[in-house]
Length: 157
Ligand SMILES: [Zn+2]
Figure 1 (tube, rainbow, N blue to C red):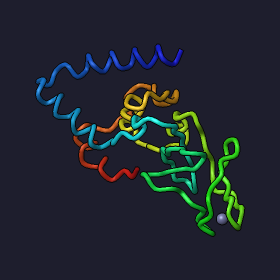
Figure 2 (tube, helix red, strand yellow):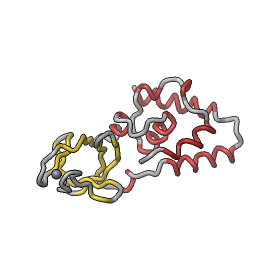
Figure 3 (cartoon, rainbow, N blue to C red):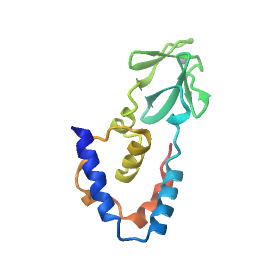
Figure 4 (cartoon, rainbow, N blue to C red):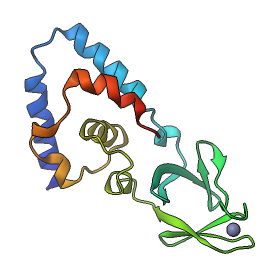
């Protein structure tokens, strides 16, 4: 169901973008690729964590969580972390709860790993995630393209 709506929306946008010359369109796509640096295509197991409001794609190797290639450790005691179902706990000294974990990568959008409409769509396309229903609404509040180019760099990943 969602797939169908998404496809239709993309077709609609292609219609909209026919006006600019092709060179401009290609340039824009390359810039967008730089804004969203893909992570999950390196193979292996991936998931999404949400620690204190920070949402990240993470790689899971032997049950350990790696963010940006570095093993995530307990923020209180620097102990190793353990994923139990959809939660992450310290398995070092303090045993404290660290945050949420999801194997479903679409959680990245559900948990607002990206907030801007344009970026969410870009990530969904690149990582093959399901967009939330609110992302499929008409483009009335989508940022102007020029404003997008200026401000999007401030997003953190
Ligand atoms: Zn700890």
